[in-house]
Length: 571
Image (cartoon, rainbow, N blue to C red):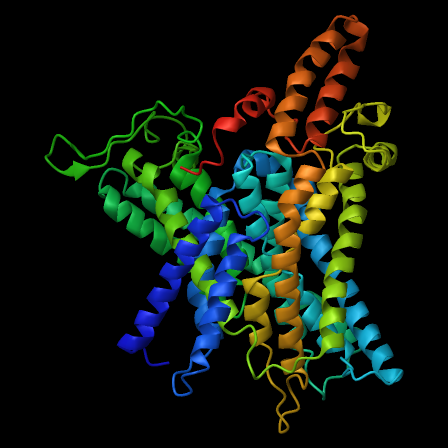
């Protein structure tokens, strides 16, 4: 499209208006309207206004969406997630993101295909969706976008180390990459001349594995090269150049993978993890709030300007590999204090533009709307998530050394309305990870919002070509089904999340009350003798886990008691 002054003014005005709406939603505490939903409504309003200007049209550019707007969001998420908490929750995160995405894709496809065929068979005015297109829809709609839920958790004072927060954030981070790789694999099956047999299925499986593994390797190698670069340039670059080069390195793996038709999302996530661990460094994150951040530049003995570096120099001792890949990082203090803020600004700008963009094209005239297809699409999203989360939570708990009895007991406690922590199971004696109880599972079901990624992927489905026989004949229907799923999940599920958390007793007020009662309960257990020591630790762990908090942190109780005064801090 031609970027005229009028078009650019419209874009900037809409983004600014979205920022104002988000601020008003947060200021007046409008719990039933997520901030993402507010941006969508702004876009819908803009689309209605544009109907009165027939010669003034916006077109959806899928390439710009995936190549320009999505990478900053994904990289900021990979950079900001707490790596220690992610490691402690790795089993359920991988289970939900990988196995859950595959499971949801197949289940969604089954519901859409069988449901549309059945309604068409009984004479209802509902087009029949072929199974290949249903699988493609299942893959793209399995990409979750829980921005609204994370915003609610932030407003309630939860931090990025709380169990429920880490699970939702971690799943969405890895889920996008898996969904995109699966979608690109299934798109190759949209070919009438292709016979789907065992050989084709095996070829698709190999393609999926090669793309996933290859993208991860490119991301890791790029992150390693970035670390070596900053090690060699340590003390030479100014903080401004350090931040600038950091952002350039961030997008290199994305466009390499995009050039070879692999997954740039997977690559940028892998690179973001490496760059956060070894370039930014974890040492600076563990420092207290009172650590000084040097605002300016220092002058070295040779007169050159360079950033001030905190901690022990990574060049001082140890092997070459240990000096390069040091957890202290290679950025100056000033760069470390600004890098997360800069990436968050870029990500927030892109997120706001994406949701406004989504609302602008949500009810496009080129969509083929059908009430029954919209109902089937929404039903398939809700049912697949509702089945996937409890099933894989049971698996994740078992992999963490937690028995089936403990999981079922949490369900029974939920049904009786009990919020008190109870141990009662010896299967937790050798717990190796977190316990995902029934309340967290319900929140995880509501966290399965669909958003911008699903909208972009459905636009990339090729329209059927009568000459080559490739593409989909029902792309307009799939676009309408995707839009219906996004609207329902963002406004209904996202808008009710706050009230759900309050109802489940997981709000900050209830959490503080529970924590007040938990401390004397633990001490009372201590007084019963050393023979109860193991059971006491187990009770405390399960109690913390059932409140959606991380039992693996030594400072969990202290953090919970002071959460009222602060939310999530990224920098």
